[in-house]
Image 1 (cartoon, helix red, strand yellow):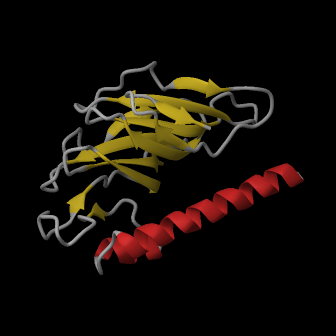
Image 2 (image 1 turned 180 degrees about the vertical axis):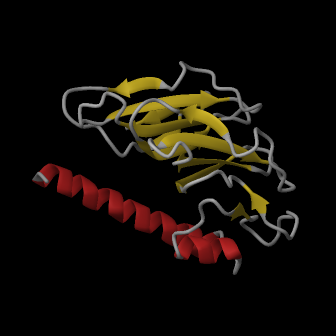
Length: 197
């Protein structure tokens, strides 16, 4: 691993740990979700409301229980008291894909059972990141190895409040420059788009 890649890895590791600390400290009650995040096993499980002042049903809401593993869960607000969840999905048994699910403010799944496809291109897609589009949907970016060259690129997709993908099938390329591009970071731009780095 080159020095530059190692430094990038350390920065991403630090940001991930800081993010978990902030979520754990300021947003989670003592709940199964807190325990699951601490045990890194929130996937293929269920979703819980993040604050006790909110009013989700006391039982778990299944996000996805498809075969094989679901991992690298990320969430953003849907702007209506619910959340949009994105994850890496291994249900195909051969590739890693990106799926997404919306949960409303009462804890009910809003889209297709076990999630909507964001990207099911060849090879692996991983490290999804998500931000709100300000209209009840989300913009999702991820690392993508669909080229099969061993190098990673960055792709993105927008999904509306009804769970319909709005950009190109399997995502729009953000960067496919020479060598690797991976571990995207993003935020909304305040105009229905996103800034992706």
